[in-house]
Image (cartoon, rainbow, N blue to C red; front, side):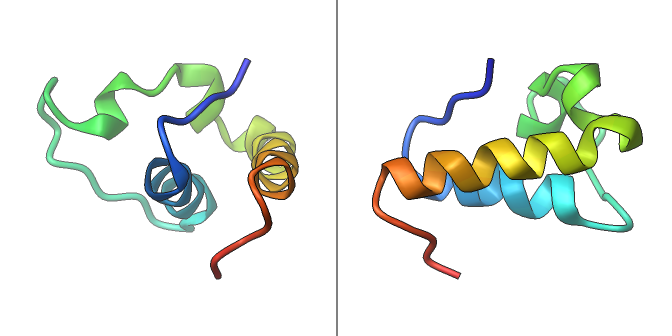
Length: 64
């Protein structure tokens, strides 16, 4: 299951998942630390991005 609070949140997740080199504060308070491991896994990148695209269509298209 994939969800986002709003378009800004969805764009943030998309940018993070799509990044070739991911950076994070490394603290438990960062958004990245709260994402599930399956979502951050390289093996699932294409599926997660495809699902994000579907969510973007549901809320009226991409802002990118």
